[in-house]
Image (cartoon, rainbow, N blue to C red; front, side, top):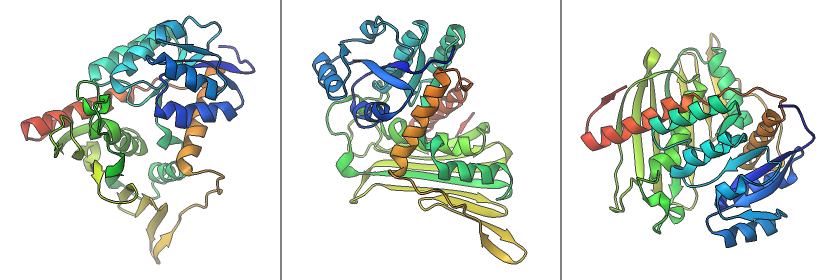
Length: 337
């Protein structure tokens, strides 16, 4: 589409992520104006809209899509609605940024990607970790061979128990895309695969305990072998008995290693181990919020026609891994992909 001074954006779903991240950041960004919001709880939509200066509030995505002059939408609804709401927006001729994951099954994701191709509109998945400067620096070190051949990657996200879902919301329903694997695991799985250029998975084993028997896993432990004999381990939980969430990421290579939390890159030389961690410019806000700001700015530039963004085909690979994890846990065996 032709470039324009500012795009008009609709936000679908007035959940916490919309209120905490998308709406306040978009309120400050040049190049975009939020002109409509919707939520099945229309009273909440009106309240949230008033808080962020959005005049139009609707009870459904169907009503929002009738709003004049929209260019794009941001989908912030529960996981099981992501694919449907994305497809409706694409079919209405709008560009879409959808909260992760794109769908709850590979079949669903494949269908949605097909709708995007047919509509000829841009589709991005909210993967803000891909917009962190430390993640990009580590990815460059991996891709340019600075660490040698990567043979193992490990990622974990341990969320403190106080933040665990405790009511009958969608996160506690497997059918609706709930559980720790879908909530936290897809982020770390995508992060590992993205850093390696999304190599093909070959086999995996997963353990998904439901310790309090509420119907979904509270912890997910996944061990996966990728092509080129690279191994990958991912651990996530909602049940950390601590005051703060814990994160870790490590990439092990034949000639060095890289980590986040803290950000360190070291490599072996004939003279010994050398720290080659690049210096990053200090930011004025925390790294998580800053990564969302960069991602939203990037999405605006895509909608304005300033950048070309390929469709997120890798989402099919990601959801095939998620499905294999559930099969492995249910059947108690390794799954070949």
